[in-house]
Amino acid sequence: MTEIEPGYLDAPVIDFEAVGMTYPGPPPVIALRTTNLTINRGDFVTVIGPSGSGKSTFLNVVGLLDRPTTGRYRLDGIDVSGLREADRTALRGRRIGFVFQAFHLLPHRSAADNVTLAQIYNGAPRKSRREASYAALAQVGLAHRADAVPTHLSGGERQRVAVARALVNRPSLLLCDEPTGNLDSATAASVLALIEDLHASGLTIVVITHDPAVAARGSRTVAIRDGVLTEHA
Picture (tube, rainbow, N blue to C red):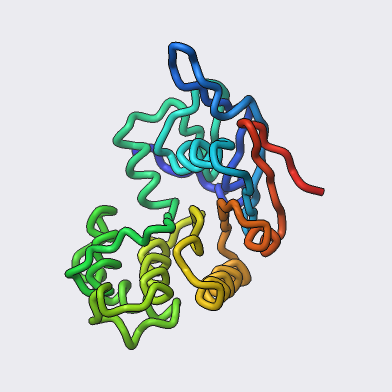
């Protein structure tokens, strides 16, 4: 695995240099037009756009799920463009925590088990996994629900478990895709407050949303429409 160079903390977390994404046709579809974008350590960036605007493509490229067809992407100072797939997967597991709208929790495993699984996939030492899972759940205010299964948790609690799972490997980036989309307004506000607290602690956060009220919670907002990224003033 490619190691992160000494001094990576001085590098942007996300650095797009003429990055673009075109899906092959016929006809070819330009999903993300050539763009430059820098997200520095400690930023809280919201990315807003309607359905079909290119938000999912942007998330997949940032999250190392898809390779851009043009340009250079550096994550924590590492040029990921030429990495082997196994190296991209390992880097993604160590450096990016994902939070999705649909939670993606195993329904018959406890909250602590769901958080622990993220460490197993990342190769964390067995003896430290349980302790780290409980610490991550405590960080999101759910230490008292560690043994509950998702079917016995509210929507807000399930999303907090998903956030704990994203945090447990101490990522550089928390990447959230419509994290409040399945929640009522009061619960959504609680989850957004948690995300703001995580940002205040120094975590770099990118939230992808279609909701202007959610977008307004970020310290920077980037709009995407027809694959074009535009920074809001």
